[in-house]
Image 1 (cartoon, rainbow, N blue to C red):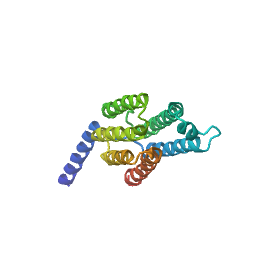
Image 2 (image 1 turned 180 degrees about the horizontal axis):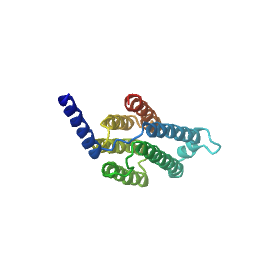
Image 3 (image 1 turned 90 degrees about the horizontal axis):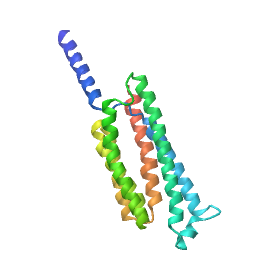
Image 4 (image 1 turned 120 degrees about the vertical axis):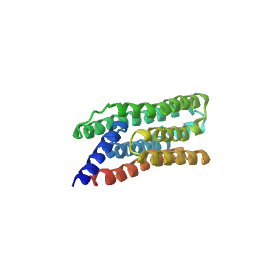
Length: 208
């Protein structure tokens, strides 16, 4: 009896220490919704490129590249803002249910380690855009996002590192196959997020 109680106490202490080091209030629904937003954004981009009344594809063929890409870049930023806001909302709800703070020390460490590669990637992508390396925009966003997830994986569920590795692989494929950026962007930010969110939901939500 005393031995089993001691083992239980040790497991509780270990769990408390784990929660203090890692942020475990990431909601799988945040990933799922981010994937949905990304796929919707990709659908809008595809329509604007090929089927809109002012077809961007024609502008691109005529050499007017920067104008169309500004619109697509703003669309991508809108998707990012929407996904970030939704993630904060779902994570806040999950943290509240667990009587935890949204911005605990672990959450701040997670945010900082995620933000550093993302900020570097954002600057890098802007330089590519200004210098006209448009075919590298989609691969670069995928690569730096994957690196950010890998870096953040030390401060939350280790599963997020698998998502990061997958994003890096998709980013490298996007470099190998130029001209397919929108396709790989849809896979990386859309499909992978939904798959990851569903797996996380089944592993941590249904299993709890």
